[in-house]
Image (cartoon, rainbow, N blue to C red; front, side, top):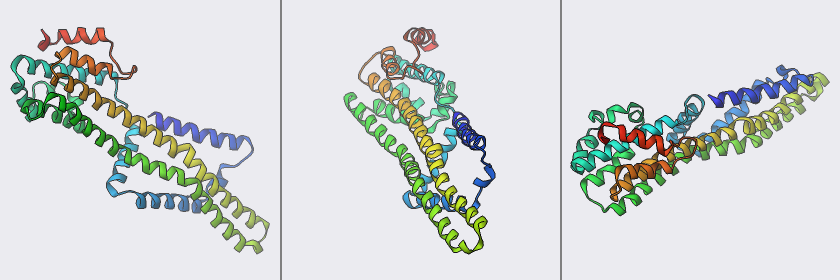
Length: 287
């Protein structure tokens, strides 16, 4: 939602200043310039990226505009859920985790955390980390490297849409110049039609330059930066899972493994050690 608020501030500030200086916003509405700039920008995106990256970019933009960042409460629930899982493994043996990992939708633990279960990627990352622990196919010291490799791959994949958005943002000022040049060509072809026609077409050409720079630095580049922050937040969530699961696999006590994960979080979403420890000790599995 803050993205929409920021976009409105950009638009109101630009048009407000233009009008205060005596300008008429209507003169900026030259459809031909919007068609040239928007069409070329779309073409650049189609040329530069596979279709699945373009689709993912649309999803990420939608999430940035309408979605909410991961809250402190979601991290708190994650830590509680991990603690419950680890306590089951410690008390009943790792084989007791199999029913939860194989059928997470029917798990008595996971059912208590619907917000976590709503994120397929997070669920899969956790399950992929727990399966080798249960199967005993790899050594505990090797699990962290395995999960880190998966996390790095996810991070690289998540950055692909941002690279495309940055490319479009960097291209827009040049695209605006292309639109302006086309406008000047059109103007020169109509130079015999009188100063009023020429002036109107020159204004339309200059609008092309303005729109290219305006969209690049007012919207596209800031939006790409917001997507970077969103990606970093999602990777932090997965890294929190990694730290806890890897610690538990190495033999750390459930409370200690969760504490390792807690310390990996940014201060803005990090629960305090006291409130987390109190909550965990009061859970049914912790009594």
